Amino acid sequence: MTLRRILGVDPGSRQTGIGVIETDGQHTRHIFSTCLRLGDAAFPERLGKIFTEITAIIREYQPVEMAIENVFVSNNAASALKLGQARGAAICAGVVSGLPIAEYSPKEIKQATVGKGGADKAQVQHMVKFMLGLHGRLQADSADALAVALCHAHTSHLLRRIAGAG
Image (cartoon, rainbow, N blue to C red; front, side, top):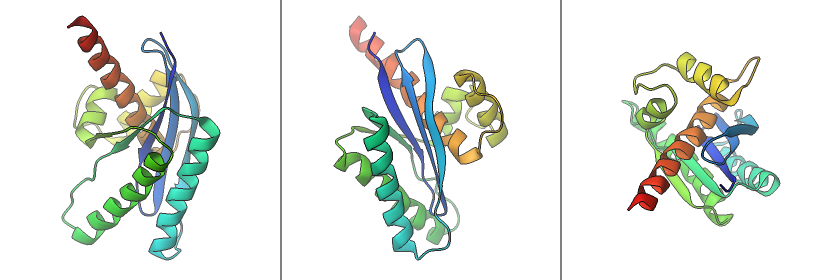
C-alpha cells in the first residue's frame, strides 16, 4: 500500500491546531503537530498568519491531502463568523498548495477517533495519543487537529476499500 501524508486542521481565530500523520491504511504514525497561537493581533493579521503558517507547514511536510473540521454553529453569531473566516484562511492555504480538502463535523471526528460522537476533549486527546503511540502532554488543539487527520485517514481508507470491492 502507498503511504499518504495527511494534514489535519482544527481552525480557530485565536488558536489553530495543526497535525500531520502518515498512513498506509493499516499503520499510522505521527509526523508533526503544533498549535498556532495567533495572539491579540488585529483579526485580518491573524487570518494572514493562519494562511502563511499553514502554507509553510505544507511546504515543509509535503502532505498530499488536507482535512479540516467544519464550523461548529454556536449561539454567538460573531464567534461563528470568525471561526468560518479562520477556516477559510486555512482552506485557501491548502487549495493554493494544490491539496484536495475534506471536511468533517465534530461529531464525525469524535466518532472516528473515540467511537462516540459525544466524546469530550479529554477522551479525544487520550485516543489520539493511544492511536499514534504518543507519550507526554499533547495540547488540546493539536490533539483535535490530529483527530481530524485520523478521521480522514479512516474514512478515506474505508471509502477506497468499498470502491475497490464494487
